[in-house]
Length: 339
Image 1 (spheres, rainbow, N blue to C red):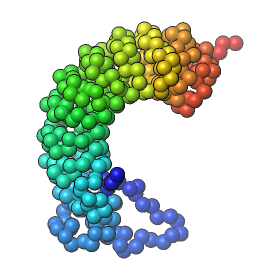
Image 2: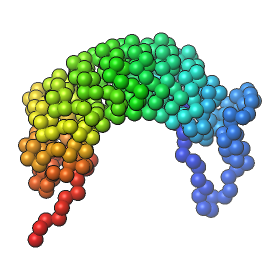
Image 3: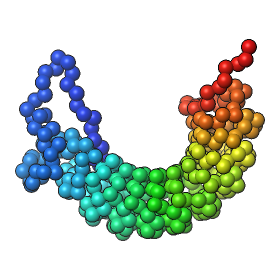
Image 4: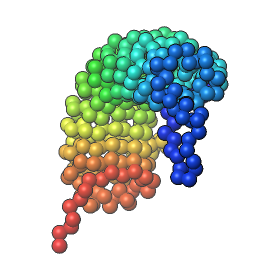
């Protein structure tokens, strides 16, 4: 594959004590990078290797629409447009829907695109993306607060979409989520709809019905999700390997039973079992219920239980006993034992 990642900003260079002052070339490229949006025709004047250095030093937060063609031109010097399959515009706060369209027009082979926290990119951009890049497989829209249900409808025609992040897209409602999953459901493997505040538990049920091939799901912060909704997901998405239920505050011990049943079925079938489970903030869970589930959790490598204040040292000890592969455990602070 032709992988091009020109938008990932490099760390700011630091002068090591004793290594001498920065060179004149470094000072000049830093100055140009800082004021790139004010310099006309810079792409026509600077040699390619200098322009690439300038773009590497420019922070994504300062990118504007006028920078995008320059970035593409330096990318195409290395990788032909028909082979560019990955691009990241993460944190490009000043790039708009109009500015990003040049990417879709010139990179029809895109399969993975990161637009996370591009706060000026909305539905018009998603319309162009769906029309120009039909082979897209991964899309990160985390924090794209202008995206609405209309944009999600455009995503529903991407039949190869396997990974989608809509976290913090607070203008998206049940209508938008359902438009995506009804259109792309069979192909979706990873879906993050965490903190989509206008999404209700009805969408969780639709996700379970249409996205049976999911291996990763986040509904973190869904204040309406119930134990029955978790049961639907666990019953129909048997390949689940990562489940994020953080701050789903209506959940009780009843949600652990279907998770246990799913784990039991995964072990029995010999298929990859759940590796990551986030129950942080689910304060209604009890020690007994968790202890009953833990003997089935040998596959877990990540378990988050922060804020589950009813847990005791007993469940902490059982994590050590039954989860030999655990590499990331977040457990609530326990009261010291009484004398």
